[in-house]
Image 1: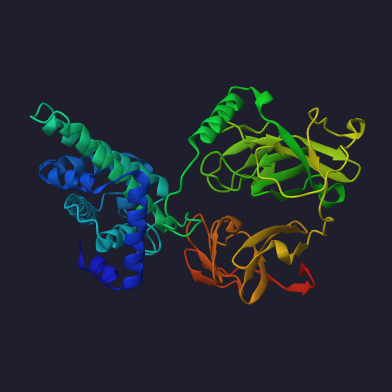
Image 2: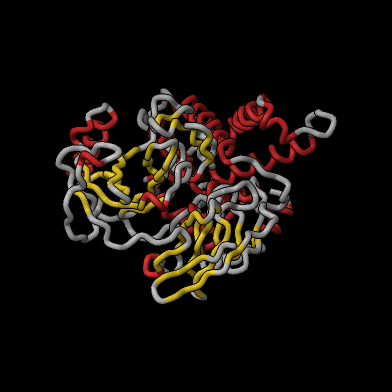
Length: 462
């Protein structure tokens, strides 16, 4: 490891190093990586040293083979920068030698976290950015190379079980390392390593699994539904949409070419906020990684065998209802008569329970302050603008919802104090001023005044 790496590592605070160590231990427990596995890593270190030339060769053969990753090592004239390649090979060798030492303390965890940061603009060179998918792929390449090396040296030895146990130990460690490396990409939505494992009702999980499989096989009869009102017709003009929350489930409600459609706001790829994406014709595109869906059918065009969860929509008078799975948690509400089927725009399933609106619908630029606790955000669509409302200790603030770097959905990011983090590339903004506090974004968010009158907040958009 070169001196620039050492300088960046030693400049990190003890609290940051300790936090990295706590997260490593939490993920080790989550992935089942134990002290016995660490001992097996240490035991196989001579094998790793012996086969390290093959491991590093496999790694860089792969990177240099494909134009998208080869470009990371090219000079202006199109030739490979050998001095830079040699430096990267030394860093890779150092990483796996240090890992094979199996000293998984806070310092090691901080080191791994730094390596992840070095692949993004948060590292020593802000011009370097390696997409997360390549990092994941390359860890897989090394995992395969290490498994092959360990198996080749241990197979047929006196301890028949040692080969399997050692390969399994490395596999589990690789899962932990992937989680550590991914931290730099800003996808964490929760407090890291928070809470001890809890007991789970295995019978309930099995029942849910059987229901899920039945649904995937096309047997929808096992999915009881209940009806909830989510909007008024006046709220959503044809060609517009609204993101609604039903007991923690985020749903995109679309008024599209005369029809009404509701899909779960979670892309099948990595859970991106698909319902906030661009809609061109019938094609809805997820803003994170470009997965495309046919909105009326919810069928994925990128992976034709998959589809978004969708929900029946019923329009009765001025009210718009969505039928959601009965298994979701319910909020207390008074029963109301079932909307008459003959006036429904989309016929609802027979004998589906429903819930009446508990609260009158608000104008598009208003929200109930009680629905937005400190530390949380919500998204509003006001005059075709997508706006993020944040509740911090100082009060309520509104900004543009899209990150100024690559339009990442800040509503899917994490709000920590006054700082919201984009889930795509880790850009950070102060929601009270819109200013950038960490790149790669360089342009501030537009802000909007928020007025609070009693229990109602109002975003003022000119």
